[in-house]
Image (cartoon, rainbow over all chains, first blue to last red; front, side, top):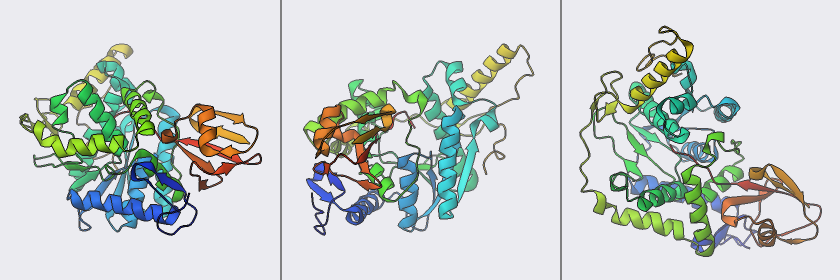
Length: 322
Length: 66
């Protein structure tokens, strides 16, 4: 297979575009897709400070890398979830990239700040691990961005992630979620930072290829808690379809974006500040504070001491991010 | 050749030359879900791999919610 641009040996085939590229021209293609996403959706400009949520996996490290290469002001934020060796290794990957590139990396440490990890949050509230984890990450990156004055947070969600979420929302006709699924979720409300997904145009296989070509050392192993996650089932189904009909994922998600306004009629409930932490919420106490309070209560009961755990919600707001 | 299947944490020995796409089909791996790497080089599915090669199948699918 030959590179469409230079005719040299190709390294990456992109079946949905009936094309293939060598390393150099794949990177060029990849950059262009990311730029089109950022500019086309008015995500941010080179004058904005962007907080990139960096897990240590391929997507987030690739995102941080490409934004820096393209001249954006991208600071990394790693959130340590406290999932044993997996979290330690993830943090090491993020730190190694930052050190190698001379890039600024902030760390938010959930066990360090809250005295327990996301698995304990999940157990205490009956949530599945991925749900407790997602809630924690969204809470923390919004809080860190607000505290440190970042106008926008970027995550490494790619086309496959978005297509899988969309499939799940469609299968259950979650219209309120459909109304909120977009490459840009503009802050607008007080205390809610704009969130963007610059990889919504690039497939998961392409972000992985970019990471390999760039020599990025990312954590390949999957989170142990993701075994059996619905998102993986949806991705498996979509990849079967993609194999038989290249372009299915793109057609599903990009097509949805063209029709997304059909779901915009759903009224978003008004947001207000959580009485404990000040973060945006639709109820008196935000979901994250409710979760951490319940987890703290569970820990107190287990230890048989009312003083066994320090008050958690909103505690240490400023202190645990470095 | 030695094939390192990262997501299944196993290695298999495969005899004879064949194209990457045929190798993946024999192993029952959907080409959409992996990168095929020889050394540091990504391989397209038409490339012939041979007896002396070590091939890594690296998963590209991540799960969970964020």
